[in-house]
Image 1 (cartoon, rainbow, N blue to C red):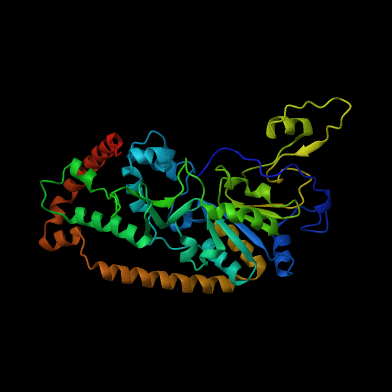
Image 2: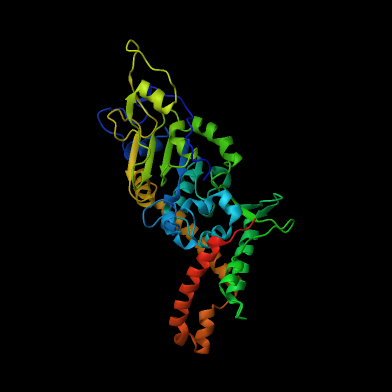
Length: 413
């Protein structure tokens, strides 16, 4: 999540020398077809991608900010002071229960990669992908077959974890065992009079360091933490070498990652695949830009030139637009259209079939390892489930509310 404060990474530029970077005819707007033709002709070979939560929605993982369906709109049961608090490092240090409870819902392993994730891998196989900068924590890039050196987890992910006290590092498998083995044990414990709300809170799995007993947190970048060093190491050289920027499923509201579209050179075509247009540029006077955007106090005299300039952002709404394309819609749908223009549809289908087959096989192995029969199945064998199911649903709902209230009041130092 990182720092939400805006950060200017480049100075204002003039673009007149680069108007032919995407198409020869200035009388027609830039399109996905123009971009596809450049790739097919070999004129583009260093694609940089900025990906957000929108590419994982089709996998069943909610994005953050969509009204009604987004993660932030559905955290009421956690009794948070604000939705963002669940990823706030200060709040986590006081009360880690909500985050770890959410982690059991979002932890990697049960979500299939989407068509868009496989598209990233296909770009790598076509040797035109320089890097993916992903804001997601779900690791679905790796699940889809993208090598780890080809992407940067800008906000970290679940692949590693670190003790908050002694900084001992742990693997994703260790974290999985801590979260789910404890959770399974508490859910299957039938010695029963101990299963009140307080016990339920204590049974929310809090992974503890085997060396010092501190809380072990997945290496996800919370608000208030610095971005991973890998981001700082690669963002500048990758943006300098980039010859096409694809922005996929992100609101571009969290900085400094959200500034990537403004970092690439003025000769670089940019495509936004998103439901809504975001980060739109505005035309203003140079004096206004210097005052409002660059924070300069200088006031230009009437004798000085005060030309029109364009603020940072996509140029979709400007007549001067020569390099920006907006592909509106769900990521999978618009990316599929782009793949068709590239002539790669069959290859993407094969890649998805093979990847999904591997994922399904791994899921079956995981289920076999568990070797457990659910409580409902056990009760069905005993003939007791039908008589008690309605009562249990009501009791579970009551306990869910009590649990949420208690979690909000619980602090761990």
